[in-house]
Amino acid sequence: MNKDVKMLKKFNFDYDYENDSLFLYNSKSKSKASIEIDDFIIDFNSKKEVTGIELLSAIKFFKDLNVEGTKIDKDMLNDIKDCKIEVIPKNNFLVVKFILTFKSEKQLITPIFIPTLNKPSPALAY
Image (cartoon, rainbow, N blue to C red):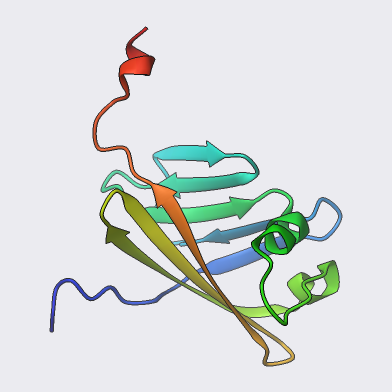
């Protein structure tokens, strides 16, 4: 098998209906660090693997992505039955593709591009 091919990993999920917060996480891996980009938080373990993703305003996040043909609302997010995530390193980005399957059998496949930091930013030195 090709080592460059990344596999979809099953993630657990928790949707907070009242606060519209969606948390996708790998229960077998502990978070050691987080990166926050607007309302999007990514947790990493000590091997720099993604262990969790939190969307603090999930409805706004999906609306801003303008996912074609899919109207996402709180009831739909409350009916997630399965979540798989694939992380693909690509140039200076991590492509995070998550696949949400709902009880209605609809699927939402969303790729997100996240810049990687391989070296500390000179701006952080000051």
